[in-house]
Image (cartoon, rainbow, N blue to C red):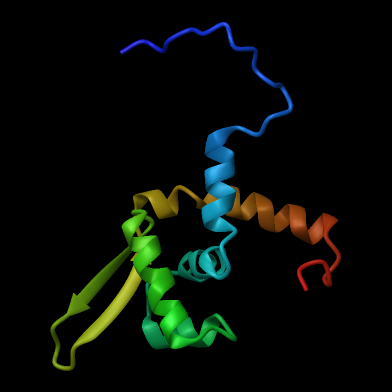
Length: 117
């Protein structure tokens, strides 16, 4: 299907819709941090809660469902015994690694440590 060409002028200063969606989703409190923790490999709920200081169990659970629904995180159950549930990045989640690494480098060089507070 070809894109329809319109006579509506494009505002060159408008932010691309995809970038707006990306920052809206990844900028939601805790989402980016959870993804960053999972770049080190799969983790259990308890390991994630410890690694993401200050997050409540209910919020962590909500965020993991959102990230899984978006296709960035997958939940794996090992029936055990004991039953163990872990979370890991999907291919789409892993595809974020280069961008997250670049953002980390940029923040280290350009944002003062107090900028996020």
